[in-house]
Length: 85
Image (cartoon, rainbow, N blue to C red):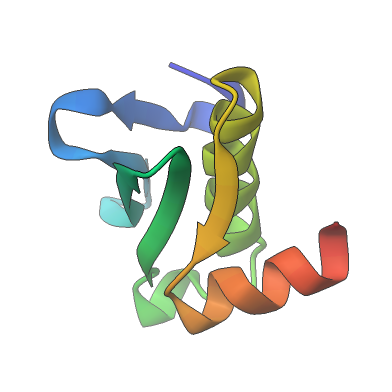
């Protein structure tokens, strides 16, 4: 488990958390020396609580720690990268 109740499921290339019985997650691919976030999914009742930002940040912390470039196929992750790097 990582910060804020975020769990890294390496087997399925996901970072996820469960809040109020609902799962929010980030899915990624690793290839060519990069971690590419392909989906960020947060159920509507959980939106606006910073959960997506926390998941994306955790995935990119993992990329940094693993020496991987940060990429974003997901539009949310692309915006996050522009704002935070």
